[in-house]
Length: 308
Image (cartoon, rainbow, N blue to C red; front, top):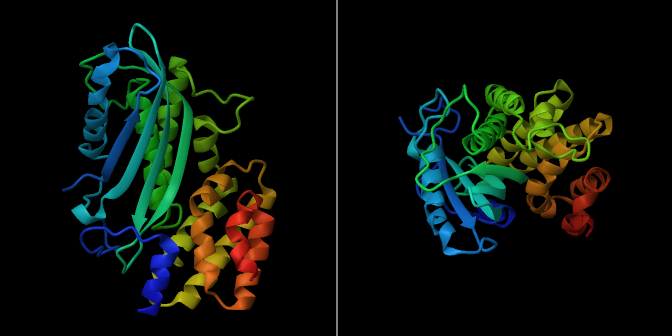
């Protein structure tokens, strides 16, 4: 019971209906996502855009009702997903500029708790959505609306599968790469490897597909499967495994030419990591703090408790 209380403190206690079982089994017909979309149209003036109220259910159906992988998911295995979309501007032909934040969560084995796997933010999305437009999944032709969504769906799948097996996300990062290639041939906005923006879709998927970042991706597996999933049964071993994953990330970051993927990891995990080591033995807590101080200076305030 004591360790269950620690888990609740560590992971902010996202209670879910139904018990998560069969985590290691082959995902064995429901679709993969249980995704909720929220939209903000406050910056758009005029009642002409009121039909955008339909954008939320149309997009949720597009994501949740399509089968994105070859696996069958049980209802309790579906990936919890939140997408926040802010419409920044619109034109008379119903072309829009928007930004979006994608978040997915994954269950922690043997608990009713979920952990945020990744947060992805994109501020450069332009697409057309006239009233009555249908969303059709087409992997051979690029559309600025569905192509953007497909790209991030596959990125989210890649991150999720990486937490269950080493480099397990490869097939889905590859699909995202294919969408990027189609987008570039269409000259759509937001898909180029722009020199003035080192944090974009092109960089994101290209780096995830590069072997130079395999240690980071392997750390996702070690952090989640060998760390969080073992926390209830063996918190001491779990913390050691999480520390090992962080050491791997530190070493990979020292050799990397970009901090982008590492910042994505720590943006989602900093508070959680702090809570994981908060009740560790003093030596381990201080070792974790020193490693984090060197590796993730952007979240130092989250780790201050580990010095005490």
